[in-house]
Length: 157
Image (cartoon, rainbow, N blue to C red):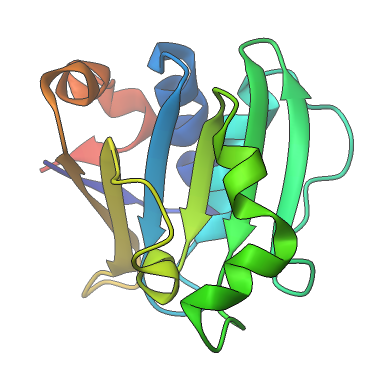
């Protein structure tokens, strides 16, 4: 399934609608090149789950955690990770021991140390400069989250 986003606010609205459907625990991989909207999508999701504080990209900290209406949420940005073993230094095993929503940017950099995704969301720039999101569910539960996401949040293709 693909959606086209004409603006950052449309991307955030789509993320908010998805967040309302998710059942924790959940692991979502956010994939795509720099600047395609991965953090923007995560911000929309986290806002919909009740996060009121500033939501910034965890590019330098690697991990930001938030209390949400659905429980704990972890937002990882692994862009600066040189080796997946570095996840051990932030205590990834301790974090993984508790049920949470995981939003993971650049998941390929943590290969072998991350749980498999329930949902893979890949963002890229579409031909007309809009952003395209492609979604791939890893299980039937995640596939149900995607069903019927409204066109009002983005044009489904």
